[in-house]
Length: 209
Image 1: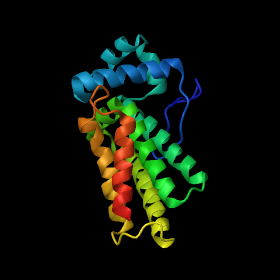
Image 2 (image 1 turned 180 degrees about the vertical axis):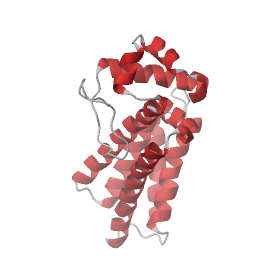
Image 3 (image 1 turned 90 degrees about the vertical axis):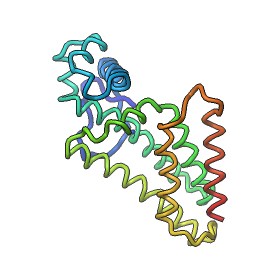
């Protein structure tokens, strides 16, 4: 899944997952929605409850978000947009594949851990999205998967990675591990996110040798 200009509405489903800047009112609404979705579930969190928790009018909420679906989508979009931007930034550095894979994986795990509440709510409630927003989510995830897969393929071509395992399988396993993180990771748990990120990256890179 960042902030938008105060006058900008949430990104339209199907648009590019670019980081967005948000006004204080939008941030307050999203924070309230995230908290209530986490506590009560999507069905149990009413628009009126979100309005009251955010201390805004219903008109203000609907000015930025047309429905609870839009709030749920934007909770995820903010996270995937940040992660796609981080991925693009690593690729722009032109690092050797091994270094790039490590940096991508550690960055992805750290950002997921930092925003684990958003990831947890979305993984539990994503099926509530309408068709257009579901399509946008799948497109964002597909772009991340395909870009990471291409990075692994590049490493296989230049000899950085010698595993015979298809790059698509590597991407499924590596990214699938991160997708499961919101199910069990706790910020107050025994292992710091940075240590976990380093260990996962070491594990994937060892498998690529």
